[in-house]
Figure 1 (cartoon, rainbow, N blue to C red):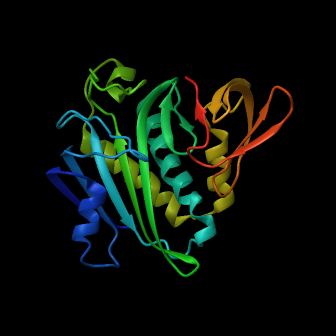
Figure 2 (cartoon, helix red, strand yellow):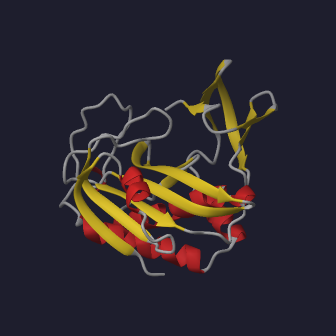
Figure 3 (cartoon, one colour):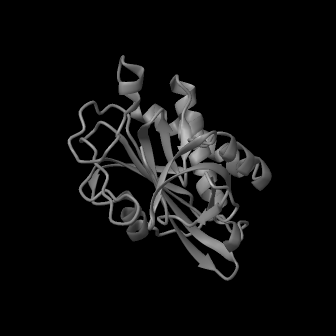
Length: 241
């Protein structure tokens, strides 16, 4: 798969830039920026990034072979690609925190924001926005647990362009060999807190539970200490870290 890669100095949001500059609908485009003035996380969250230090990029793909009901596999796929990339560069091994953050130990190294446009029962367009902390050392926002690749490595800074190419290589490999069984298995095998009981909080308060599954549609399934099965959509439950 060939990506058209565009590097820009600054934008409010790479996801928005793609929407405004998508002139050829059949292209697979990647835009990465040295700085975002309004970097977005999920919901109302923002993404802190020092200018020129991190990898802020968005991909536009046209996965019309993916049915609308299978769109969470795209989230799994890009999470797998980022996790593979971190494992290429770093030790200890990284994990995916449901639904699509990438963690090293209890630190958040990467956040992903996905926007799909449907056409009938298929996905016409998909924009995958990725914020990967690469070379930033101090973080000043009130985000609870940001972590960068250089903080994990403790040594020299990384070439952001090289890291981007590695993510694209891994993602292209997944797309070219698209297999939802393989994608789902890899994603579940590397889930953060996939073993044992941990603390979570929902609308009723904090509780202890173990993770039993992430369903193909993205729902998280937990089993609490009383043996009660709890099923959550995104934003209905939070990890207590």
